[in-house]
Image (cartoon, rainbow, N blue to C red; front, side):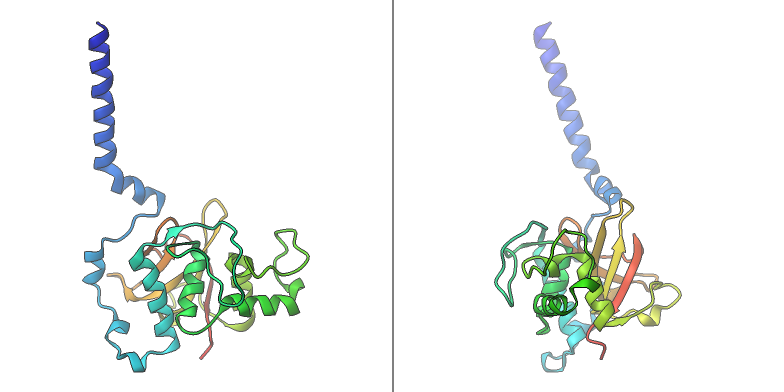
Length: 229
């Protein structure tokens, strides 16, 4: 009888494990973090990747910087880290959603760490006071979604929040901000690839950095272009 019970337990464990493996894509899809398979993305044209290197614009370079994060599958890590200043970065291969934006802009020669820190030094009271700080912190300020959005609202171009009604406002290299159902804030970069219905894909990190059809997945709270030209 003892051996029979052990055999039944083993069979149950094996069956449950098999079902989890079989259904993991569906489970990830429900969580909102399933990635597109690389072969699927390869079938979607990328206008920017056909542009000669010497003709790439700032928006092109921002997009390509974000795509590099998706290609390497940067793992989500929003932990506080002491950083060099300016030009400081967290550990390679790791980062938060905001680090996708930061690295994307650095690929175009724009350092949001320095820009946000300098703006907060001059206008600290205009930025969200959510963390109990009395002065700017160049290690983390630029890695916080509300601070990024505030800087872009102040110095960038605020654009339509509705890609369905105003598709012409949405260009690759734009920054988009969302609010999750639980209230958490998120951000990503608009891609040059579009879905079958014409909605741009986005590059973002909500677990592992990926490029996917997720623009309309959550409430859009901000859409900015920087620099404005």
